[in-house]
View 1 (cartoon, rainbow, N blue to C red):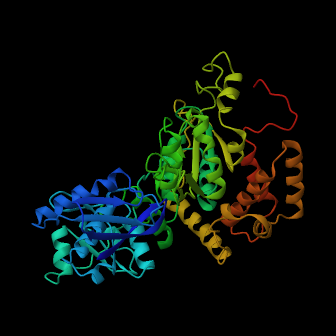
View 2: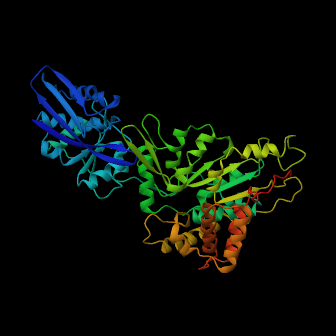
Length: 512
């Protein structure tokens, strides 16, 4: 007899259906698992054998073969344990085979039969709903899986409880979804930032249209503080965005207590991070910090200190909004539409603009330091501002004006305009997503604005990408003003944010 159970293998964020086939046949006693299992899957036979023994179920002295189909799909992780155990129990006629085939199972077995929580319960529940099956998972994973209301989620504490459920002795109650978390992970109020009016304005524009922002300034000028105010300016995620982001966090094992957060994620990796930790990859090809910041903020402090190889891996994700991690036998896809905020000192010593503190190599040291950021990456940064130091000693510190709540209200209004504007446009949620004919339609400048863009493009040699990014930023500025059309003042402000650290075409380097 061949019994079947069903589970999933993960290719990035995409769950692939896996049929677990178990045959108990005459022959020398053996327990083999085939179908491209990795080490963790191959070791499942010992966990399953011992867990069954703890329930006083002895395996027969026959040949047991478990096939994970499709056989050419790599299988990684310990979440295959429960499906393998169920297929074996069905083959031994301990549980009804037809009942086992109606569910999708994930879970790791401990040696005493307890079910250990595993990563990926949320995308597994989505796959179960698509296959019109119930999901069986460990109790610790039930709260997050239950957020997919389209399918029944059974969360069991042990394999013994699973057997009792299938034999009709005691049913497993459906799992309940965890709590909704609306509090941002990083919460700094904009009122704590004194002065820096231009930086505050750039932060508001970046939040309203999801435009990437680079801040250049001396140490202590408030760049990191400004960046940590961004989560408080962004509107809560929509249910669809929260589910999409939580699926990535589920795969990374970062959902705590099954709670789904509607607050935008904030990721701030150290500059010693490797390419795999930023964009994903590694032995298990898991999601990186860029994907964990999906629908949220990726903050790269001390940007030039990141290895150029790491920075350049972000160039394609910034354009496409997704990351493909290729392997010899698979391609793993992770979405990563994040808002990039970067901060950098003007040079290695950080005091290029202060003659009394700058090193003797100024201004060459600044050109070399910021030159670690490649031109193609710099071209993808919509807003570039200089953050001057604030004078604390002379008492000229400007008082704080608006707090995060006031600015967030304007950002939410601008986002609402964009939601209505792009309704029905696939893949376009905010101005930063608009491109091609759609962008030309929604951000068409007036005659005076077109003349300004022509002069700027001629003098500074703007690329086509830079031209379109200026249009997107101008559209966002117009949305913040409540203007239906993009006019000359909107374009002028957008251009001003673009020209920081940009030298006119054919102009020599200056010494100041």
